[in-house]
Length: 108
Image (cartoon, rainbow, N blue to C red):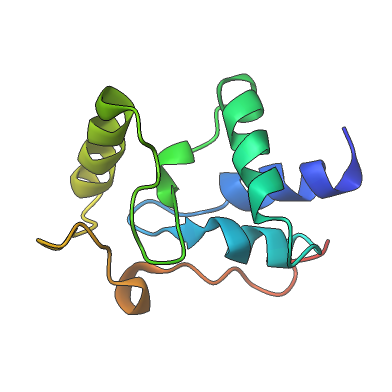
């Protein structure tokens, strides 16, 4: 695995229950501020293999970005079961639920 991919996997593994991070935030923490799309690809290809809490990753607006209806529903359900509130507008309050990892985890 490439270093960026390893860092992304580690960051996602460390998002605690009841919190979320954005794709761009993860990319920046992993050392590539413009790597949000790469984070999407890593999540898609490595979530099952590395048992990643994929449901804790949302877009910059605090929205579930998955378009496929069943997966979208499951992500919302998992987040709500962890205590994350999703507003009537479909958004998560990132001021309340965004996880900011300690510096030691970032760019490790």
